[in-house]
Length: 259
Image (cartoon, rainbow, N blue to C red):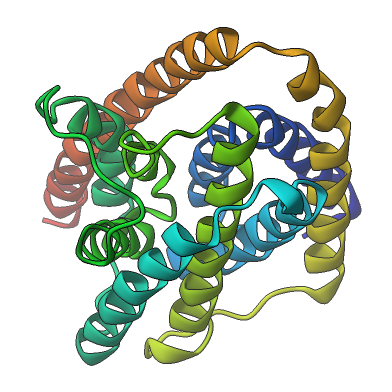
């Protein structure tokens, strides 16, 4: 990549890390969509994993006193099960499929019946959510919207939610880095300069968000999170659908031209 492109991505990563620092999500959802548009899927997944590990790891450190460790441990069991299963198949999704799943995921989470409230402290529920979220992570690059439902049954304030989710996301993105950086047959390589910029930008954006999160109320946190995620999800559904329609049309055009 050119220095201008690296600088532009660095600014984007500061902004997306800032969003994630405020809401514990949204930033990664935006970033993976941009990366998928710019580079091959395995490379996009590796770069996204590095930025999100830096962002979530730094966020977890900043809010370390608010982390609830039992839900994190339960989640890790499920994530390990999913990574082991995916390592046997080495499946890599197409870009349109990944984008559509990015858009659909938040709405899938909202379709859960209101009377189903997960208990983050129960091992079997943590394992189920960890497995499903890790599946989504390896298909789309993110699992934040569905991971939010993991905390619905617990008594989590905004600080505990952001901190505990950051630890769960750190585990997920590290697993994604292992998968796309080494397990699959077309394992990705990454420019070390770009990786360094990504780490620094993610830590900066996360740090800038801390004071604003402190000033927010839990009600404002929930309201803005819902609006932001809905807007982003609708965009990805539209973009993924357009790619699905566009690809067969271009293939038919190319075939006709060759004839």
